[in-house]
Amino acid sequence: MTTATRAARKGQHTHRADTPAASPLTGLGSLIRLYGRLCRRQIIIWTLAMLVMVPASVIAMDDAYPDQEALDARAMLLDNPSAVMMTGPAFAQDDYTFWAMVANELMLYVLIAVAIMSVLMMVRLTRAEEEAGRLELIRSLPTGRLAPPTAGLLIVATANLLVGLAVTVGVLAVDGPAVGSLALGAATALTGMVFAAIALVTAQLTEHSGTASGLALGALALAFMVRGVGDVIERQGSWLSWFSPFAWAQQTRVYVDLRWWPLTVSLAVIVAGLVIAGALSRRRDVGAGLRPASAGPEQASSVLLAPGGLAGRLVTPMMLAWAIGLSLFATAFGALASSLDDMVADMPAVPEWAPIDLDDLTTSFAAFVLMMLALGPIGLVVAGVLRLRTEEQEGRLAGALLAGSSRTRIALLWLLVVALEAFVVQVLLGLGVGLGVWQATGEPRWVGEMTAASLAYLPAIALFAALALALYGLRLRLAGLAWALMLWTSIVTLLGDLLGLPDWARSISPLHHVPLAPDAEVEAWPLIVMGVLAVLLSVIGLLGLRRRDMVAG
Image (cartoon, rainbow, N blue to C red; front, side):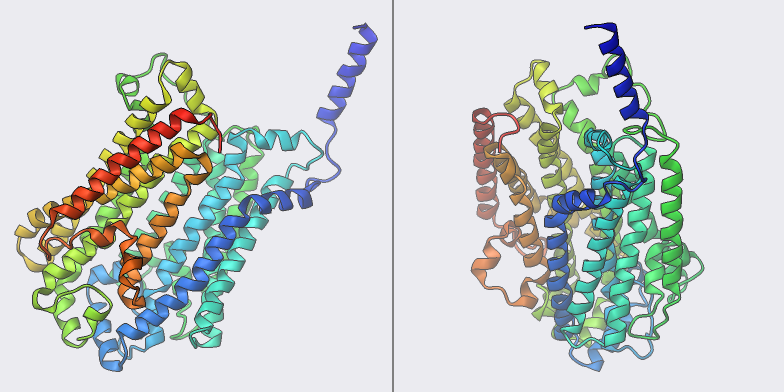
């Protein structure tokens, strides 16, 4: 190669690297189409889920509280601090209408769902793209510096707009007041964008998408706790409540005394978050976080080198965070037992929408709460096993294989570690429910009884873990189907009685075969069958993993 040729190529390379794009937003349209294609499935699923679940929940509430007497009994429950912590501010408690109940008790869970969606989607389109190296390839093309984050932001905004619209349409479909329904949809979309802005900020702080998601979801959990404590201090919201994005939406007082101005706080925080994220992005390199990653030790720790150490290193932080949050939920739910007698006395139709025995109300209620909370460890065990798919797709699993481990050994140890940690979370939930009921009734025996009852759900949790492994081992693209069974199980558990689902449809859910201990007698055969199926599915997954190629599917 001649000197002139080398100089020409060097000059050409320098020109391409140093010449700025015509505009900071060059290539925005192409990136919007690309990101839209990447997220179209998630957007459709979230939108349809809200379009179905919101009106279904309203119908279920209408069936459960058919008259003013039942509504008044429900309003009495809001005198319990745990109920306020788990729902929201108690507006119009003295004149409790059906739509006031919807605003007070359904709105919070819609807001939490859209916040989780926004966090995951925003991190997926920003930090995850950088971590995988794809953003660097995009930036090597004629692409403006602001085009990628702007495209991601617009896609997330579109998702929130569609979800907010689905909430509004869903409530209007069941004869909700028009203006209040519009406000509910707007509050939902803006709350989602608040947490999207928070996620955009956390994406600048670290070079790992998992850490960015964890920080943003931690902010979500903190917002929930701050709002809860603030509303306990003052039933209609105290000064502390206003430090939570959830309160800005709930303080619109939808269906009670509508006021729009609290949503301006959400708008202001969204703008502030975007400005902060933009300022931070200019202070770091592509692919790096604002806070540089600390250098690891020269040698791996004994824990990491132990069998299953990699799974524990990657999965344990998620398990620990959710264990703390779910345990608080369990204790709060258990404490509601002190308010049951008065509520059920005015609502004899309770057994029609929940498997509760009026002859032994506390035991039946505690068993039902434990069954609902079991969805948490099930979701954790599915997410933990499917982390294997992420490690394989990102190429990190190949590195572990080069060190001499086999895929089946890694997968088996991974399954055992994840399942064991999920079992621990389940036992902690039983302990939490027992502590809550103890607090409500003054009887310490509940701690031991509910902890022992939680063990009945371990075979079902193991079955979900094995199913996720089997789908992952057979074909990479099938792994996500484990979430479909998780979703159906949630519907059966939470809405099965209200929707009047037939027995064959409920039987698809593994939780349907778990006895409601300690209210019901524990039968061993269903648990043994689920345990055997878990072993068989695990074997199928390991054999399938041996036969297929890496990243095949």
